[in-house]
Structures are given as structure tokens and as C-alpha cells.
Length: 344
Ligand code: NAD
Image (tube, rainbow, N blue to C red; front, side, top):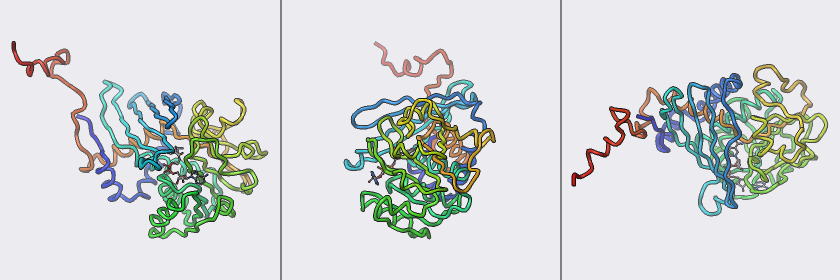
């Protein structure tokens, strides 16, 4: 049998645990897996692009477990009543290939993306950071906010979205949680005086959400919305600026999908796992500008699946599903249906 966490159980589990506690725990799992980065079988995700959006498969394996996520990205979806990003994922036992754990991953993707953003910012943002500028107040925005509060203690947020209803929804969800929220009048207004800038917009275009003149010394930019060929958020002049360091998850995938698709093929970047393992420097002075060119990588999904699998193991927040046809005689697969075939 395969353990399965559906949306209802994910919601019940998240409500019982508390989002911020989950985010803190998930950071530990992702960080553990990033520290053993070289053990993993890794490849850029497999993407199927259409004019509507993209559908992707994201596999990773540590040779004990194999994981994959199915995920879509359709920026035009909200206008049609659908979400931009939805997902589900699976863990399998490498020794026999049987799927052991399956989960909804629409909520889980928002959690793991926020946990990754906070894990990276803990190393790359100034330790005295207090104020987050959030550009894009869609599905990911509250999760991003709570991860920064849970992991970095950030309590002040200035938020901007071109859709006033999205900002209203964000304030409605976040204000009761005690955050100090300022609604900005533009992106320029939002980022003024911010220590960390998160761009989480969705547009199937080379958008320019941030220009170089908006980036003040000492800022950490968490650019997580641009994650597809032809879908970016940063003015390339920011990346090219002297003293700006760019960090990525998995270089071969980010070259295709990240902000750096706008840069020459040999543009220097650092894979973040190297910072965690001490092989590369993170932030070494207060005035540096750091950019996390986040696109989302399969190991983060693998870690998130492991985290939920372990967290729900001793609870009733999962079902057992009969996913694998498994006859007593492994060679008699037909026998499962043969007994039901009417005789002539
Ligand atoms: P969403 O559609 O729910 O929200 C996006 C918001 O961006 C909308 O409210 C929209 O009005 C706003 N927006 C669009 N253009 C804007 C602009 N120029 N200025 C200000 N606001 C603007 O999408 P979501 O689920 O929140 O995802 C946001 C982005 O993050 C998507 O592009 C998605 O593909 C990406 N994403 C990345 C990762 C990752 O790991 N890096 C993971 C999940 C989602």
C-alpha cells in the first residue's frame, strides 16, 4: 500500500501544526539534503511548453528514495478561475521501485518554495534585516512572508501588486497574524528601505519588476517568480552590476529557466549548496548585493515530501491507497483479473 496525503489531510495537518512551525522544520530537511548535494542523481526538470503555460516533471534520487513532482505554471489561469501553480508528488523505494508515499503538492510547493527562500536568505541577507518588500501578492506571497518571519524574524512587510484585489487578500490573510504591513503605491515605493526584496509575480514575459536604480546597497533579492524560458523579473543590468553576486539552485536548470537566461552562457554564479557546505562565501559585508535566482529544484520537492512523510507517519493525516497491482505470485499479474473473466 502507498501512503497518500490528499488536500484535505494536508490542510488538517498544516492547521494542526502551524504554518510557521512547518516552514522551520522543512528548512531543516531541505538544508540537510542540500548539504549532501553530491550524493543526488540530478537533472534539469523536463518541461512541456505551450502557449497556455508549462507542465513539468521534476525527478531526484539519493539512491535510497526516488522522488518526482508533477507541476504546472499557467500565469493566465487566475483570470480563468484556476490557480497558476498546482502539483502532486511521489516518493518511491529505490530497492524495488514501489511508490511508498504520494502527496498533494500545490500547498506543499508553496511551503517548500518559501522554506527554500528563507533558508537562502538566512545566509545571504544581512543578519540585521527587518523589512521585506514583497512584489506580487498571489498564492505564494503569504507563505513567503511567514517563512521570512519564522526563520529570520522579519516582521515588517511592504507589499505591491498590480492587482489591488490580490493586495487586499494578502492584507486580510496576514494582518491578523501580527505583521506590520504597509501597502505600497508602486514597486519603487515598496522596495525603498527594504532589506530583502522578494519578487513573486507571474507573467509569461520578460518582465522588469526591478530595475538597477531600485536596488540599494546591502539588499538581498529573492527573485522567485521568473522560472521559465521567456519568463523573468529582473532587469539584467542588476545582474551585470559590479559587486552583485548571483546564487542559484542547480546551474544547468537555472541557465535555461532563471534570470540568468538573459546573461551570457559563462556568466558566473554560485550554486547555493556550496555556501552551506563552506565551499563558497555567502555574504561577507553589509553593503553587498546578493541575488537568489530561484526557479525551484527537484531536491527541494524531495525534501518536502520526506518531511511530510515523516511528520504524518504517527498521525491519521494520510490514507493507504492501493496504487500498485501486487499479486501473491509476482508472475501471475493476469490472475488478478483472470478470476473475474466470465467463462465461455
Ligand atoms: P499568482 O498568479 O497566484 O500570483 C502572481 C501575482 O503577481 C498576481 O497577483 C499578479 O497580479 C502579480 N503580478 C503580475 N505582474 C506584476 C507586476 N508587474 N507587478 C506586480 N505584481 C504583478 O502566482 P503564484 O502562485 O503566487 O506564483 C508567483 C510566481 O512564482 C509564478 O511565476 C510561479 O511560476 C513562480 N513560482 C516559483 C517557484 C520557485 O521555486 N521559484 C515556486 C512556485 C511558484
